[in-house]
Length: 227
Length: 395
Image (cartoon, rainbow over all chains, first blue to last red; front, side, top):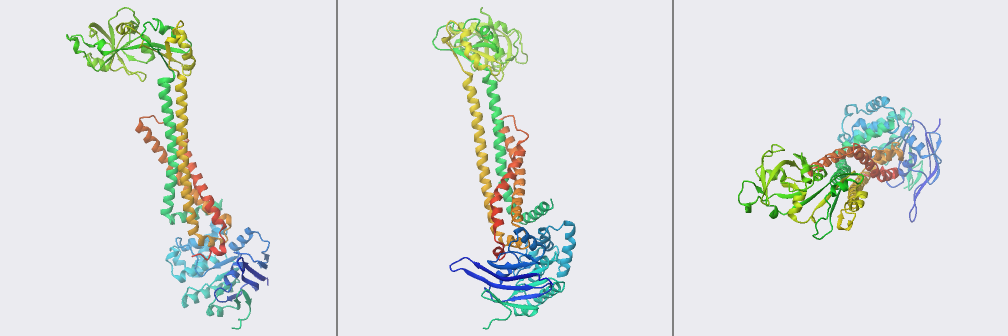
């Protein structure tokens, strides 16, 4: 089975005096349908890794392959296309457009992915149904509850059936009930073959995943560091 | 095509969500474009008006006066005919004004000549004067004005006739007489003023008779009308033709000076109108650009989100450019209407006839759109360059 993502010795440094080494020699491979939790404290480099995996940023050194395509020499347009068609993002702060309706927020992803109008309504309806927000389709997004907002963000991420779902602290702002609901949804997508990578510092979420990867001071490891 | 429809819908949602800001921007563009249209429209109207006025009153009209002194016989008796011998001269005529105290105009029935009618003027004119000044009304038989004999006739302006108790409901009142310098004078016609000469309160008598009252023709003026554009050459030759023996005794009012004045005024009006309009447009552009930069900053997180969802730098730039274009178009539309109305009001307030090219409103529309796009170039470029990795985490 071909890995959805395959990162080899990825490093990311930021200029400064001294330079900041946010990520060092990170190696990670994720298979389709796999649920991987990247677990670590704040400032460990989790978000830097997520940006690299989601093609929002490029590594200083190392190689990274997404869906079999090497990204080192990949043109920006191709990265944009992969983000719009093959990668879904879920953020801790939801990142929804409050002045738009639930449906319009989901449709935005399809619009950016250049999906024809004729196919969009059905895709949006399907996504709304999957996350249980059909009854809130025409509500202003700002009026949704925290749990509903995160479900909306998930619906937007999976509306065009990506192969990789990257979630940055998806349950960080949710209560226990909504956390269970969101993790249940992610389970469904994983079962459907979507590779799910979750960044978290929550033990609950870490326990939910197939595999935990630990990150401390920009270094990935399969086992928790000795404290 | 789909990409533009999507972008348009995208913008429409965002612009209606921020309705106050959108309306303010549209008003700013409308004011800028409207002022531009209005300044152009008013300029064209005013220029045309000035051109019309000067062309009608001056450009085809030349005045010949006596250079100075009190000598008599400055103009030969056939001065009008001599001027007519020049090519492109259409008509010519003389006029000399007589002091009211000398003429002492009065109703003929009034016995006491010391109580002559005030508020009227007396002038001696030749027949050609009627033609030069386009005077109408009861002008038939005006050849008597050229008589060198002592001919006691008078043509009256409407107001002068009223002052003297002469009916004005007919151009040829019959059997009425007035008194001039103690002489009985037959009223032979009521004349109407023209745009070239106001004669409402004037009593017009034969030229020779007026000269006799004045003793000298040193204050007489020969007016010549030419074909349009012939004023310059005619004015150069006129003195020589009228007084070949002593051309220096006459002074010609040069048309060329007034012509250059006209073109100067036109040019200055154009520059003034354009510069005011351009400055306002520049100001509008800066205002919109500033507002859009603020909008970009406040939407940093959204820009990061769009990039995360797969929007390219071009998509982000297009979003803001389209928003600017829509704002500019709507503002230009409102501005075009505003400019047209403003021009009409300005023209009506000044009593001008409106001269507005049909393309002018479209200029306003185009300029509004261009201003909207230009103003959004820098904000759109800035938005496209925002780093998505950091933007997505901005609250």
